[in-house]
Amino acid sequence: MPTFFSPSAYVNPLTPEGRGRTIAAFYLAQGNPSILSDAEMRRDVLTALMSKRAVDYWLNQQQWLELVRNVGRVQILRLTDEGLRTCSSSAAGGSATPTTPELIEANRRGMREGGHGYTEQTFPLLPE
Image (cartoon, rainbow, N blue to C red; front, side, top):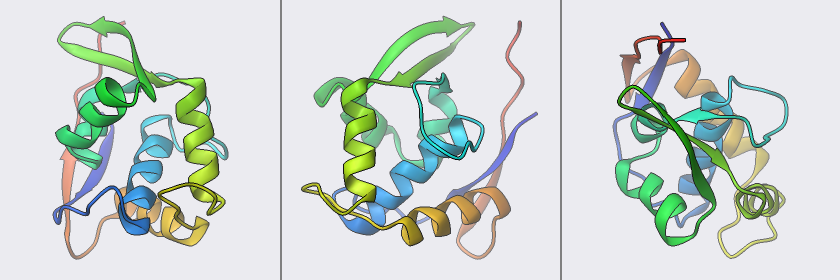
């Protein structure tokens, strides 16, 4: 079963720190690849790593995420082309909500390894 560590403090997603957390959550939900893609991600994992409000914003208001399918009661999402461009631009400091690779990596590490201010969360495997 996948295990991640959710940050306990809410960070405004429209700040460099919050955008770094958001992008880090996408990496982990995609299996922690070296680059983001349109790979499928579990909504329950994203909600735990980001927040329900942030996932809803990316999905419903900005359409940077899209629903792919449902597996049982779990929605499977993926980044749209616009979502991928937004993440890339933010990571390079060139968007309205810039962040840095260092903030993204620090969040990835915390969500993978835990530590002070993180809560361990385990997610059940999805049926095939």
